[in-house]
Length: 113
Length: 115
Image 1 (cartoon, rainbow over the protein chains, first blue to last red):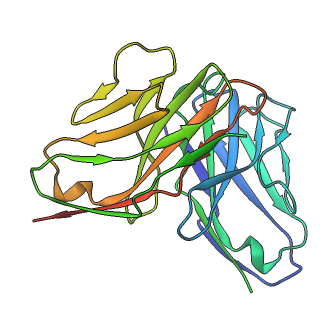
Image 2 (image 1 turned 90 degrees about the vertical axis):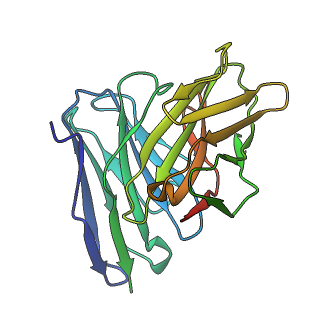
């Protein structure tokens, strides 16, 4: 039981490049989330999904797109990376409506130069 | 919109002593959940404790307890018998089951346990 995994762990991009971050969970959770954490700050929600085939915007969605084609996977895409997107990205999942523990992945450190 | 305030950017505590980390929140939803997470220097987010807004008793998990004062909108974390391994960043978060449906985090408190 791997829990929540994220790929890759580290990545350096040049401004304007695109990339996709993969989040996978093996706990059969309905809800999945993408957060970003900037230095000295708490996590901020980018997008979330309440089930396969559904996505919704969080607090800071601009510049990101997501897809949930399979229940166990939640992808975060950056179409044209900007230095302001340099951050640590966390994926999380939860079983039900979210009023309960969210299980976090180990994070992806992204640097955009 | 939900908001979490953690007013202590850094705290120090002597090993084996108890420490309280402050958290106040603001949400308009009648049903919500309060969480505390620990983030050690390695970066992962570790769930510590949860309190539901309708729970009558304060939540406890081992050495962690949540001092929930609903009228004051306060959800302080108490760590008893601090250990060196407790040194980490601690985040308070609120989840609303209303239209927002998101976990909103505070800015965190960096706790250092002194030997």
